[in-house]
Length: 324
Image (cartoon, rainbow, N blue to C red):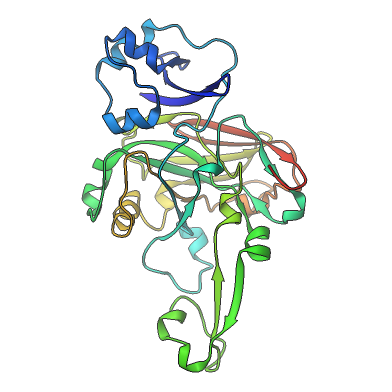
């Protein structure tokens, strides 16, 4: 089954895909099944999917016209990302951290299929990051990797747009510690430049990951029962239909299960929370560095991301002074 969210007269409307792939309003599918209305995808995730929905969805008339997509689940309590979770990208690391590196992305960054990614060219390097994302289906805390997939409601496509320009211009600072303040654990992640190196680097993924429109998702959430193995999915990304990245979730440094379990040790994962597992690392064609070769502040056109069986996410690039 597939679920998403449309915008109708400015209101979010939960929808379900019929066997023809067209969206039906979820409240109408519930009515056809004799159920109380479920008005949002988050409430569906929290309550669980009634079996009768699949049996009645095709009885409902599809939504007419061109769907106006929002992010499929636009109001999670949190969005976790996993940085450098790709074996190809990890080759450049000073040291393998041994655990997933997490960052948070605000829900206000989310946008839907077909909506523009709005970039100020003055922000410098802004790149797309094609990623697999999971929707948590039930509360998870201190779980083991073997339990992790039992807590997943479904999967979707995420373009984790990232501005390295904003990150290093506005969200980073370097300091030199006095020797008595330079603790050993401050330096386990990088090579030191001699015995007197007490520099520390602080990088905060705030503007760089969380700027408005930097979280295109969708168009659908595909339920977990339709994904045999999330660690065995092909990912392809295009600029104006030209492939710039082709990779596989089997190339993640840490598996889906490991990422979810590790996150649950520090964060209580609630139904509807989103975890995005990391970008592709392998380029294609005239884009040898993959997504890093695609600078959204310099390019024009449309970014597409496909993950089978999740579907296809597509967003045009828009240049705008000051951003969204």
